[in-house]
Image 1 (cartoon, rainbow, N blue to C red):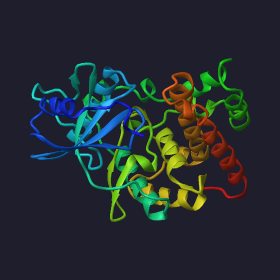
Image 2: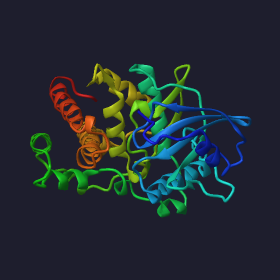
Image 3: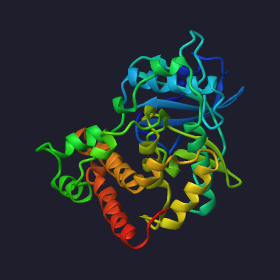
Length: 316
């Protein structure tokens, strides 16, 4: 659910008054999001998406908005641009609350299909094909907010790591990712959490990539693995045919280098461990949502089943 912070009508109007978006006619909470409470604002000037941060620090949120503003400069077609307040800030503050105001877009996340996977693959490849400016070096690293190879490897060695996480990691990655750490992978802006539910579609066409809260500078291969691991699913399991559709779309915009093809399967499994660790940190250790404290196990099971599938049906 996306309505952790209960926002009253007068509070929403006070936040709207920080912008130039008019008077609110209707305030509607939306059942979307984990880290944010989301509201649809219907004002006399249009429709807006109001986000109130639940568990992110304000500096973390500002770092995310810096990425979105940078993507606007590069004319990336699949991201939202935050409105700026009257004071020129991309993140508003109101009493003990802070968040972001976006344009409201119609659309829905897609169900599992070859078309949806191909479209999301194209969208991610467009992100990975951007030509960066010097400002790129001023943006945050993905590992400041997400979990890459180094964090996952180090966590798996810690005594506080759940035993099922550690045991499956050792089983699936006996090489300890030496291949990843020894190679200079192509890097740029990555999304870091591009599951299908972080997209909006209209008439089977991708409209926007949502929630860059784990976005930053990182390796394209990691981003690709994470996205495939949460997009190419049928009945909760990774499906090789959907993965091939995703790669068809991706390679229509960016050809996979040889080394990325060789290690793609490991990257997909790594993507599952990355999001599993995110869930452990958010739900098990921070107690953000006690009902999801054990939800990381869903990702581990998916990784184990994927590993078994690969033995009978290679991806490429």
